[in-house]
Length: 82
Image 1 (cartoon, one colour):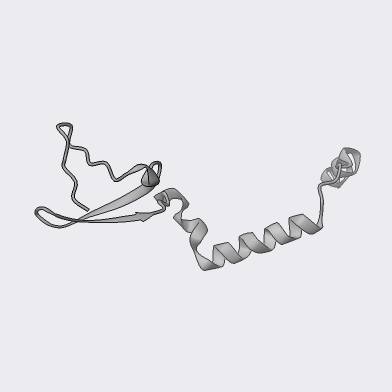
Image 2 (spheres, one colour; image 1 turned 90 degrees about the horizontal axis):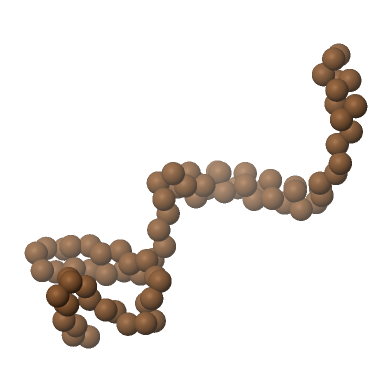
């Protein structure tokens, strides 16, 4: 595919790539490698750690089997005083 860089410095890849995240690596001057992918913010990378993912999956499975229930605030208050 041959494209021209517009006056604003932009290149159009086509509508099929609209809204996609693209990683651009400059291999050397004038040589770029474009890869379509997903971006994970640094602050959220810990969620993709295998141990954390396993813990999250177990927590989700537990929550699916144990629906929320109303709390007995009187009982909780009594436990706090003990």
